[in-house]
Amino acid sequence: MSRPVDERRPEELCDAIVHYLTGHGLANLSLRPLAKAVGSSPRGLLYHFGSKEKMVVQVLAEIRRRQRASFDGIEGATISETCWNVWKQISSPESEPLFRLFFEAYGLALTNPTLYHTFLHDTVDVWLKDIAQPLVHEGVDREDARAFASVVLAGLRGFILDYCTTRDRERLDRAVRLWAAGLDAMLPGKELD
Image (cartoon, rainbow, N blue to C red; front, side):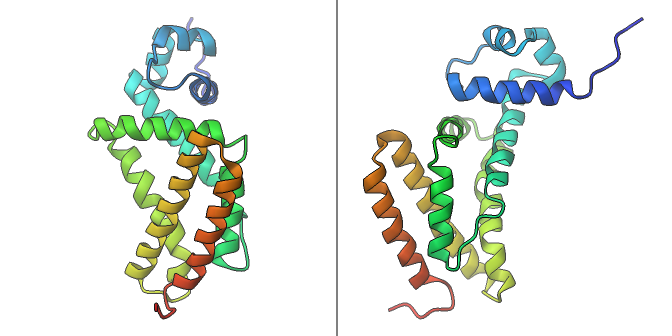
């Protein structure tokens, strides 16, 4: 008689793999040490995920889901306040390992866009939609809202990449405040000088 399938096992493995990858990265990922670290076997990982590449894609989707969930409830009276609050969240010690892994995965995806098509799409389009949607809801033209969302997304990603590289909190906090104040001035619907 075979053992019943534990439907929670892939989710548990995904959590353990996220933890492993935030500490070890993707560059030298090998199934044998990964499997040992997460309490599985290489064959077990392949059974649950199909392939090493599919496993990585699924884990990256989970990381993206966690990042998006971490922004739930972050608000501010102005765009600059909201972006400052997002900055505090993404530059926190708890978030940094996920962003380091995100940037490593981004580089990997750019070298293999066919395999990581969904990751690349979601990394840009889904975030732009999430950022632009409240503006569209307030009556801002969809294309203007998307362009503004591009400025927000590029700024935040640039700052967090710089922070992961330099850890220069004081300089970057000042830079984010300047950038965020500029966002208030360029909000779609305001006249640009």
